[in-house]
Length: 167
Image (cartoon, rainbow, N blue to C red; front, top):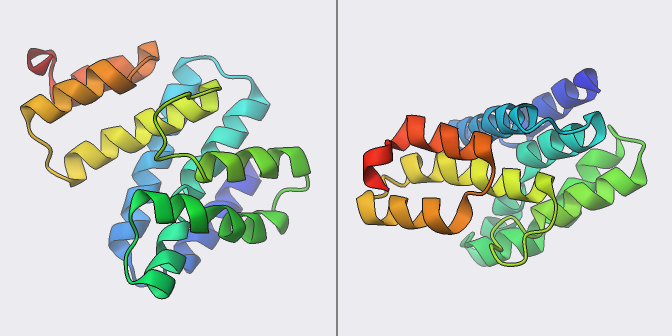
């Protein structure tokens, strides 16, 4: 599946061509999701699902901006699954995996009732990147750690990146 993840990465870079900020974002989220998934010992199928979802998690931004002139989290969740499905159909033959990836894309800004290690890890990886990119301050960072982070590996990365003194 490594070659499919590589092909999906290229497709996403092509999708966001000339938008280095978006490209850098999904590449960072993918790298952190991959690390957390490996650290948590995910099985190969769940790891592949997670990595694909991390690459396409923000695919709805472009469509939302075109249609509504904005791209808040709910619009990303609304517009993303269809875009992701179209891209994934050419790369992944497993329809159940595509459905799960699209579910994750359609819920990655929903932080209640997180079900599944892939979902939890995607949210954690996205927060690790967003806290930095959004230049979040100490109290906000501490609240995210307390309310979002569950995995051992995600917590360790958080503490290495943002410091245990904020907690």
